[in-house]
Every structure is written in structure tokens, then in C-alpha cells.
Length: 77
Image (cartoon, rainbow, N blue to C red; front, side, top):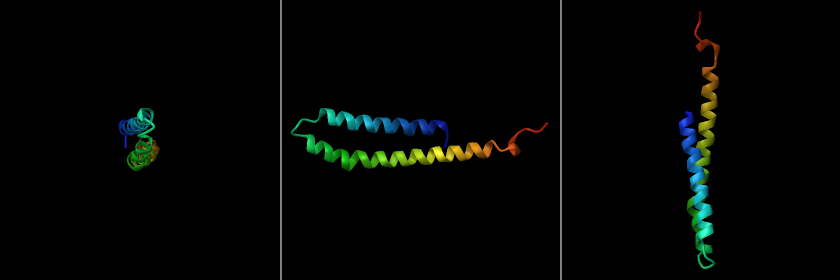
């Protein structure tokens, strides 16, 4: 994974959180229960999935960075 993919996943997380906040803000007393149910059934599972992808991407990036910083890959004089 590279920094671009990490940034994309972070952006998706922000978008999901924004959609949740907007849904809650726009819900009327009559639609509050339906909005919360939709958030629980649709948005939260997707948020958890993307957060797990982000954690995995950051872990892979850290491992690859550590691997590539090995002195064996440095140019010899």
C-alpha cells in the first residue's frame, strides 16, 4: 500500500462519518428511529470495514518502509 491509498481510505472514513452526522442532523423526530436504524445497518458496518482496511494499509506501508530502509538496498560506493 502506498500513501495515496491510505489517503483515499482516510477520505472514505471522513465521508462516511460526515454522512452519518448529516443524516442525524436532518432527521426529524418522526424519522429519527429510521435514520438510526439505517446508520446502524448500513453506515457503521461500512465504516468498520474501511477502518480495518486503513489499519491494514498502514501496517503494510510501515512494513514495506522498514524493509526498504534495510542497508542492503542502499547504493554502495
